[in-house]
Image (cartoon, rainbow, N blue to C red; front, side, top):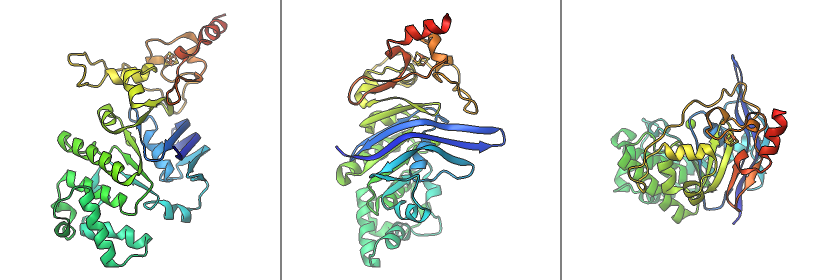
Length: 333
Ligand code: SF4
Ligand code: MG
């Protein structure tokens, strides 16, 4: 499979009055054509910042990409001109956000909003654009699309509005779709329908998807691979199977124990005690040390090396590294 996106050693900081927040600290991620990669973690772990930086949507200043590269089909997004970026956004790469209402213009009909992108970026007549918009509404499961095209956002339910937003994101046939907490604002039954819709869209269009979420239930339904982020770093990546059935990082295990699972009835939910470290002055060693039940001497001093467990499974934790004992001994003496 070909890689459509390669993120190398990405560092992003934000300047604030209180100092510099190191939001993303050396992230490496790959995305293959046609797959869904979920980026999971608590709020503030850097998952949204990483995703927004792909489309260069972080405000600069106060944000700054300090180091690293983001290759989309071989082209470095960190080095593209603003003009080039405008041509890529919404056409090659689209993004969907949490709240469908803010993404829609209340004063324009759904049809006008759907065809706007097309008419801007593709040479199509109004008739062709309308026909494509109707097809898109069909794809995302809006009944009577011809009629609905003439209506305004307020005439749709929250779930329907999110479907429209997804249709808008897909209308120019992007190769990469980034969805940041796309179901968080919706109630549970609608959430499930929207997640099914992502699966359907991927099957029918082959689009690659990055899904940002704090919710492992969402991940279990749609992700092919999962990257777990903590304090600005990717601490574990693996296939859905590897992460759910063979998690190795204590933080990943903690996340899994803190959400209800249908396949393990009666299991007690255990929240992860403590809070993530301050990213104004992040710790030198493993950022999970203060919360980790298995922390060793070396953990607080040196960030763990990545251990490769399989072609798809990688983890940054000293427990995986046989040198941990030796290093701990040197530190103690
Ligand atoms: Fe825990 Fe140490 Fe592994 Fe960090 S490196 S997760 S502190 S055992
Ligand atoms: Mg977020």
